[in-house]
Image 1 (tube, rainbow, N blue to C red):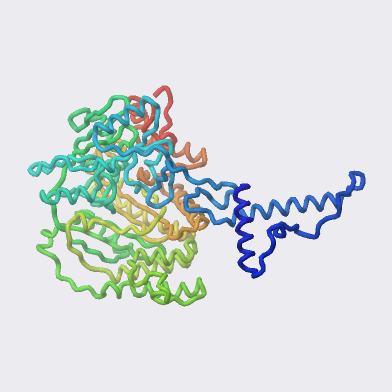
Image 2 (cartoon, rainbow, N blue to C red):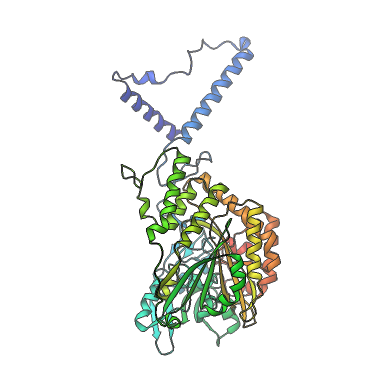
Length: 596
């Protein structure tokens, strides 16, 4: 603190000297806040007025010091929050900052290990277990809840990213678990193979996407963990173990969606499919029309998803089917070009910038400091619009209406390889909560999935939630992984996955905090009104641990009703007795007792 104040005094001297052609002598810079006081009185003559005066001087000095501290330009390497006093702490050179993609969760650690082989990984886990050193498995850091983060230490398999073996005839591929999905797809396309299904993005490590129970969409297709037919797990207590449907199936189905708590997934064997092209059809509909056609849309399309737009009667339907089903690409001429589809969004931004900032904005500023808005995609334009006033319901409604119009102008077809077509631009940094719940069977959908959405949209409007678009709804068949949100022993069960969202389009800490609080309130509303009624459980990569003890106890009780928690904790104790693979999140969700 003293060092900081000394630096600021030197800065003040420099500024004064620059502003005055006749430099002020150094000693004159040390001046009082008023005229010098008379010589101190004798103790007998010290009055209440004198006492109050000196107390005032002290308070003024403290206030000035604090104000100067808070306005000091900290270096970029400083870990600080200006709202918290006296926290100027430069980061040591050996301290790594690891955050998830959305910037909603972050830790600093001195232990971040990246082994390059199975043998090296086994050695890392063994030595960490002997020392009691945490080495929590972390993948690409894409999970919205930062499930892989651990301040005390992490192990990352980014350097274990090889495709080890390809069996073209049986369509089976064995890979190191650190390979990214896009790397894997690129590595096996020369063999005419690809993955059965994909999540929205391709940057996840295979081990990570497996462990959290990720999914794509298609009411006849299972979550991604069902594509895995065997795996190698590096465990603290038992070293390397191999698991499959035939070899220790009970542990295999438990560990396949194991949240990184049973071992570090080192290798994965995946059942692939022939590489194929898809025809994507995007069109706009309404709740009334969807109710009429829902069963048909689920049963007749290999992939289907709905994008619901709050405060409108618009739902965007996206279906994908093999080109062979269409007997070649469909003939279709779009009504609007890309620029025409986006022009009304750009016009809205220009109008709102003038309103909120009191200034007119051209496509590009004269100085060239602002990017040309004509170069932005729709999701980038949405972020810029929401950044003007993220929690203003009226503005959010305008943006949602603009999005509905954008999709109306973007109706049409697209043809491409499945790994490209099934991707989705999710937008910028965000908070998201996604739930999975049963929706009957493919032969007999129970329509609870549409009822859930209808109630959710009504809840948003009645509570005036500034809910941006989209509310994404997808489907999958059941999973046999015991810890999957879509687990079921009934083969024909289908599940609906519904995600709500709030974007973080600003870097302003205060605004991000306000958005976070509003999103958590939004999530609590859905939880209280909908989750239990529809047996909905959150995606493991999107579940957040409540800070309130009562809410945490309620969550723990809910998880026990859905998952084999005692069996999971028993396996954790056997395979990781010192809990070196665990994290604060895992310990809170699945507290272990000595009687497990």
